[in-house]
Amino acid sequence: MVRSLLLVLGLLFFGGTPAFAETPRECVEKIGVAIDTADTGLFTQKVDVDALINDSIAVFLEAAKKPEMQRNMQPMLAIMLQQAASGQGAGATIRALLYKEGRAFLLNGIGSGAFAGKKVSYTKQQSLLTPLFEHASLGRKEIVQIGAGQKRADGTIVPFTILDYGNDLEYPVDGLIQDVQGTLRLTKILNLQEIFTRIQEEAAQYAE
Image (tube, rainbow, N blue to C red; front, top):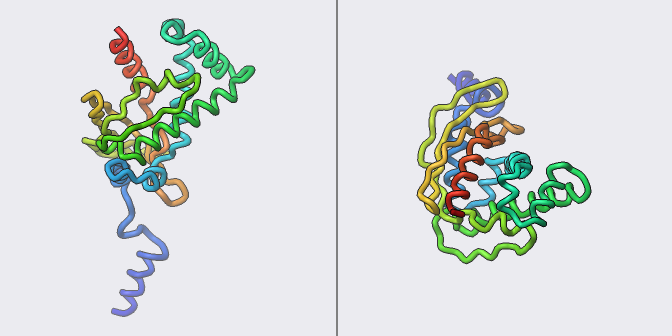
């Protein structure tokens, strides 16, 4: 009996499959908890913020090359984004600024409690990139549905839906959950382009 107990303890703490291992679905649930409790520490533990912001910037800059998007921008802003997309001139500096402001916007929205539904006064940083965030929703963000995970070689795809109380719209997300040094994290949004296109269309309707 003692031998059996030692074997169980060995499996639990020193090898095998942990009895209380976190599942990809639970990882997404914890992201929801982090948003609801304004816990930036938990959020950055379960979300690869750097990767998601850099992916978002890449999608945004690709779209910024299109004339129809440039027509709705201030001329100087359009030129700056063209430089950032091409990587020429001050392009790297502009990309770094986009990253800095995007990261600050996201973590401020969580840490301030705005994305949890708390009424807060948010002072946006003033810069040439400020117009990009003028109509960004500061309403509550709630994960309202989490689907079954689909395993693949590099991780698990977990579909979930975010309800934005700022505009009362739902956004389906296909998130890739990966094991990063023993911790499950959301590292990629596979339908990011689709989400961005939808947001562009909504912004165009808002401007009309």
